[in-house]
Image 1 (cartoon, rainbow, N blue to C red):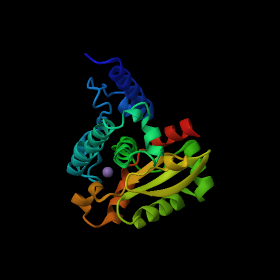
Image 2: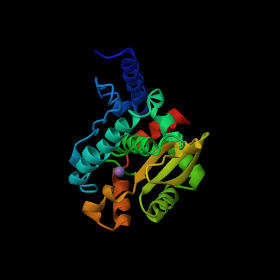
Image 3: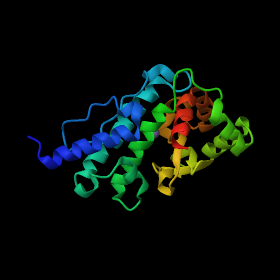
Image 4: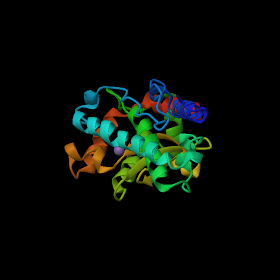
Length: 232
Ligand code: MN
């Protein structure tokens, strides 16, 4: 039997997860075990869907091992901090004063749950509509945006992420180290690129620039445009 507190915790975290990352998380049945309230969202496509740009083996390890480890380690760490279980995943990500293990793994979970949706089979090309207009207004034109984003991602020293962010309606770019997310400074992320070596090393080894060039071919601009329309 679940205690009332465990039941509340499970319900609260399940609804938080669904709200944070609707399409992937909503399909996930919340775990009945109150000690593991966050669940790994399924990859929204097959492991080989992003071939040849991102190989199936990398996707399998990245999702089933790396992302799963963030979820498992977050749940494990939260057991020691019952006062944090009523926080949303976004609350955890945006608060650097929470326990470091919780914060690191919350970021890992949040970032990857978004990242899978930011890619798709047959992606790439250029965005259309409002997002295209906004990118051109902020970065002159799409090619210039792509150049600046690529440069930023290439220059990240060590493990981190390159982001296209939305800050009070304005588009901007920034990098974060490790699993930090721009939510920490109040910005929403529209597009993100994982440049941890685990994201590309099997296929690209030390050639991060080749991985970045290939990644543009799988960007899910429909998802980014929907996110922009919702968050702007
Ligand atoms: Mn990763």
